[in-house]
Image (cartoon, rainbow, N blue to C red; front, side, top):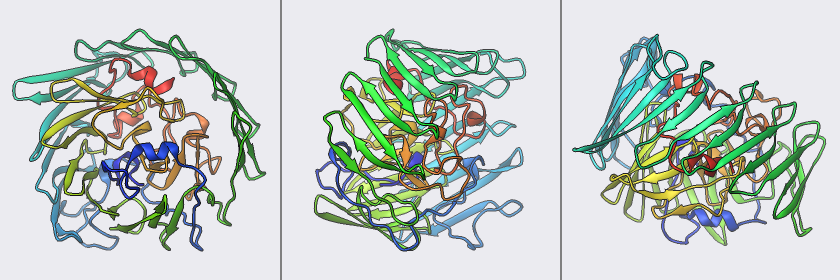
Length: 496
């Protein structure tokens, strides 16, 4: 239910709605939201565009004198969590920014980070359960992999004491990502762009090509693939998606004068009508209760109610939901426990996922150019999970999952209702819209996700979208760069 880009979340193996059975989100509908008198809007939270590396550890609260700040000692902790466990973090100043140096989670897992002089992550070393190492190489002043100085050229993961694998990135003169070369036997993924810098074709390691067409407002109007049927999209003058046409038929969407979806008409003619609270929040989707701080205090699904508990005053730092407990570190959610089963999440300083230790084994995330998880590999390099999405993040039938994990489209945490959580808000991939207005007022449209351009833009905070993700430009420089891309079939899975 939470955890955009890993801020909070849970995962369980049973069918209990208090556990994160991802399949439940695919089949639910017709349940109801309950919002408090304050409209259940998330507070603005962190400043969009600022490096995620600068986050204050989630076990500190505003006014805590031990929280790291510019010009203060950068050692935080040990701090005692509500569960009685302790955690700590030490920071270092690089290129004028306070970046994580060493963090220790409540379960004793230690992560050490190193950086180059520009603040790019050079290595991440994890000791403890499921530990591992990653190193990164970047373009110098004369770029060997094309593009510009500072763009990532290679990511190397130590799979075991005797085996390492690398993924190489190549760019064009404009800094656009043109090729991703994963370790053999996986195939190369290539990208081409139109004159406006928009992705026009993507060819994955299996030879599957996806072609994109846009209108004059940079909106995707058609996605065509050599192995998937074409899908077309139509919009109104305000940028709202009003029709989706494909091999399964036509789906229509109607909106009110405030650009809020009011009626959804499916292929068989059946309709779903949406209503809204005074603050603009959707009132007919999930049975949730909210606190005065816009936090879920309980979630009712299929007649079962799960209670939630938080470690801060926004939605990002959960410490419990139902029988699942969460542990957070500076980069994001570090671990969760459900029914005595632990699952950890190793990350770069910016919060980008790189591996998931669970059950005594480590699994590695493979992502595409916008950060969507497209595959999970074990420590031998063998594929265990694959994920396929529509352009707006709907999970496709081609998805296969042997090892359950919650992260999906654009690095977001997918909750049991089928919504994605991106820190300040929840996103409905079926229509490409958030279920509440932008609490910061920074977006042109209060409901649209990524300015209605999910192929080229992302909104990890739910407050402000930004582009240049396929070129790994600004995104890479702020620490949110792609950990691993180019898995065979990955790109088509993400965009078909």
